[in-house]
Image 1 (cartoon, rainbow, N blue to C red):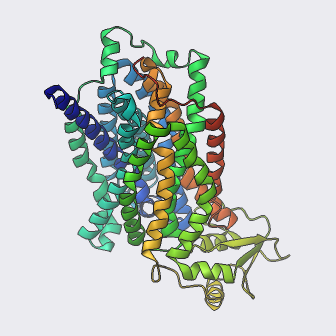
Image 2: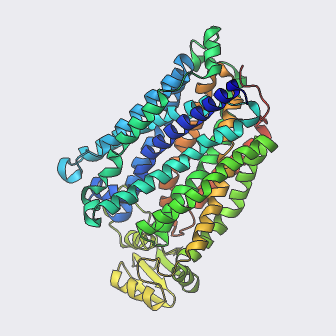
Length: 527
């Protein structure tokens, strides 16, 4: 092999490594909050019921996603105006500093309402920065890749989200190992956030070694860069139409599958089937590690058979399989609880009893019953109320009036429901295999996305055109998935009902992509 070929290969590896590692670290910064959401609820929303505090913590998590489209606009504009490299140096610096700052925020007992206010502000800064990170990294890699390998090379950027999620779990587990459980609950949870400073230093060191994208550098040398990327990106219907297809077809659909496979699965294992935090985190760590090559495989496959076929396969299979997979997951992770719900279903009889997520404490007995059952991973059916009574709980043939916690516990026990907590009879190999199935679905939907979005748009407005729909889709459709899904579960009583949110969004994405998304695999992205 010639010296020039070796040099090109080394440069390509550096580009992929630097872009991927930087994006891994940025996803770590963002996901560490989601991994510790339950614990953060105790420190920043004290006095709340466990369920309400957790939902508010998830709402703060969603707030970071809310501003991602703004980050996409701001940093997309900068990426097309001043270059790919310098823009994602800025974004990673903002992300790392905002995450590290969470480690030093006084909690609610120290500064009161200012604690959640500061937390929300930092989450907004994280979301703003992440709005510029993904597009820069994906474009940078794609513009270095040959046309026949763009799916393969950019799939490393797609894999970085799973790697960031995995890294967040590993750091949390390591931190728990360093200190006692009580210490970790008291202040040790701050360690993973402080660790972001180490990650930031490594990321900046690696990225400073990179040169500008050859496609952007060529445009700059020829004076063909856009002077107003936002205006140029939306000045024609042709490009605006592609932005809308990217938003409702590509970004919205793939992101809800990914978050379902990662966060919804973690919450389901921990909060629904009642595994311990450590058990759930270890299962997710093993599954994500085993599943990461699937993202590369799907990116490579999109080079061979086309982006659209792989994406639609992920969408279609997700719609068909997500409910069976989660039912199987419940049976494998806590078979006693799953069997009890089938054998002796719970009915909650009440009239006009919505769950108030904004309340510090639910006032009506019916809402307290809903909260108690959901917290313990028990599905229930709703039925019309009994005149003169706020709520009646029926378990098998036994009924309990009002929120009589000891009475409900006795009725559940008599019906064969296991005591709170799970994991004693878990089938670990089967659980991991099922989670891998969910990760495969997300890999099919997510693997070719960076290549698709890069290839859809012209080079001079690519950063802006790609970032805006991606972060509207990911930030709004995906970012609110944990909160909306959990709220649906509490409100309906069905521990699987939250999955309908994902199915609805994916069905929309499937139809948009089937009829409107062009195949981009052979497109020349230099123009």
